[in-house]
Image (cartoon, rainbow, N blue to C red):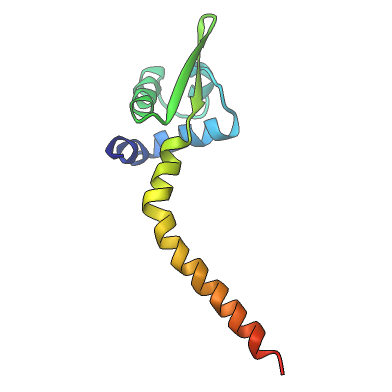
Length: 105
């Protein structure tokens, strides 16, 4: 998970993930259009995302297409977010039920 947090720490890498979320399977050239940096810089950011398993690639002819892999994000959600979210949702459900029961004569 450390590699995923490291990858997510940079705004440019988060932008690349957002772009792939909207339009998956893009070449390096297409990804470069969304960032104001050199191809080499975008390549380095993609390498970090690939090392974190957030991006996978598939060769299509001479092009290398990049795809978002949401599994590591789901793992972070399950471990770090969901367990804190569950008690709040239960509290909101309990509050709703209590308020609905107060309305009954």
